[in-house]
Image (tube, rainbow, N blue to C red):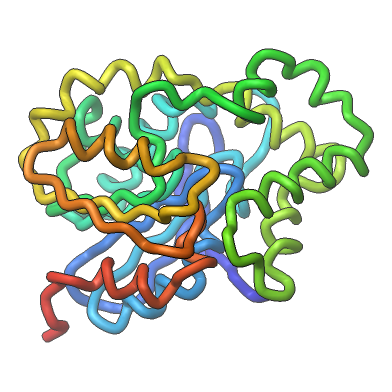
Length: 274
């Protein structure tokens, strides 16, 4: 499946790859882990019919640079995101974020002085007690996971990815998500990024959630096993005037499980393209 990010942005920790589609008011799509901007391959073109759509791979993910010594914490991702918005000269874009992309977008907004027109979060890490499951095991025993035989590592990542979808992947999609994490370098990169993602980086902005004044929309899959519905309710209670919409029959990856419904939610209220 052809998904190429042709532009580059240099950060102190390495190269971030990005691309832009369409024209009109800007909207930025922020992916989570262990995914990449490939998640937006159907969503970005649909939004580009009426918006200028920016996509990128976080440092250490997808087509962006992977190497030892990178700071891949949520705090670092938020700083890089704020820098990227400045590089793009976007003062008030719409932001759409998924999984840890939600925490990155919130931290950039509340702690890095980024400015958004509006914010949509779906099935997103935001705050509270989210260090759980496989993620918690990796944090507790990174040295064990780093030493897994390659076949065992690949099977674990594939199983983790399948757990995120309620309806299953279309042909070729799982392979595309697995590709950046294969081989010795990919395996090291996978556990490098997971071992640096900490709940402490979301705790810092939790007291500020009530200060958010821009429009915020939450969209959540009712069958999400990674971040079940109580995480949406937790966030909904803390952000004033926040909309919450449920998608039935969908899991953590609305982009895969219910792309048409997701696009409907993401385009609701968007201005028509001039």
